[in-house]
Image 1: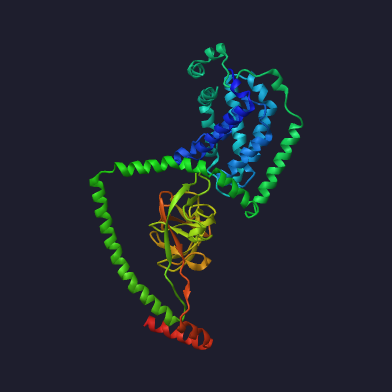
Image 2: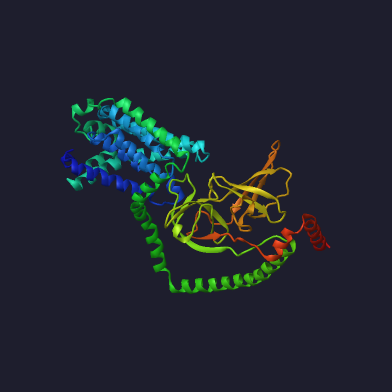
Length: 164
Length: 332
């Protein structure tokens, strides 16, 4: 893959920024209850994608900021999703390079495990205030994200081509 | 990119042959080993910062401005996200046939007639109630003021049962104000912006409403359980007089809600042996998760009329006497 569209810093800002705006839109789209339960973790998927695709410029602080925006959207206490995304970003920056040598199934497993790590913090919070939807129901979005991951990758490649 | 999609559908041996990565392939070896300086330390620092924010957000007022500014910045996206829903309802309106509209019109006319008949009786009852209040020496209340509003957003993560409505400080909305729909109580306002405000629905687990049983007059608290079609009556003694079908209305005991708006009907009563309290489940009268148009209520203020003042001024002995007289006359 050539991503020379992302070499110029200004271009990268637009491409990455716009993708996050779209992800926020998809996260906030009102859906019926049953669809809401299987809504993929769009923001999480984007974070994983960009941190592995263009590691330069993707810092822990950026992940923290995105988490902060998520907290405002989800009405959770400020800092909850920041905490989750900082841990995910840490793992991605520290071990992300090794993902290249993984097989397909190992990669999907990695996405699943990171998704569970990402969802564990809100899960603990929801349990603490007595609003939990149940253990398995809570982690369904992670599984949906993994199922959609190959299609998401394909979609992102097409998305990047628009700016190439 | 299409090749990658096709490859996903192929058997595993083919995958290994092509070795198509699900992540981007062109990663420089240099990038793999450059982790930035003090990565672990920065991670811990940011985690601590998050925890500080978490703890300070426990006191909601501290970080409220930050939240407001950020939600203002995000409001355009929120507006766009709402559009599909609006478009669907708009198209629905355009597509409805003339016959349907005529039918609906007739139905609404019939409904209005019955409602008007009920209101006629209500006027008489209100008058009677005011007279009785005057006799008892307690203050009569003015009428509740009502304003209609429209839902802007519903909750979208399923955790918080909250809605945003299109009325705010400009319309005189205040924190703690009751929110109704055509059926009954729907929620309470928890935060107010200039043109919009947020309400906590009665089905939220953090919501608890003082209620009165219309049949027996017993007071209790209706607590949300996080499901859109049920509430629970907290701490109902096992021996208390509750029956399936009892209507529960709001009571003024919390000094927040106006009296007498319907909350729900008792659906199930479970007696668990060995437990002190029965489990009473209520179906809310309001269509909590479906209503688009809601009503805001300004509870009436107690009118201070002359008679009431006189009674207050007179000695407590006299007051009790007059009270007992009234009760006697009412019982006979």
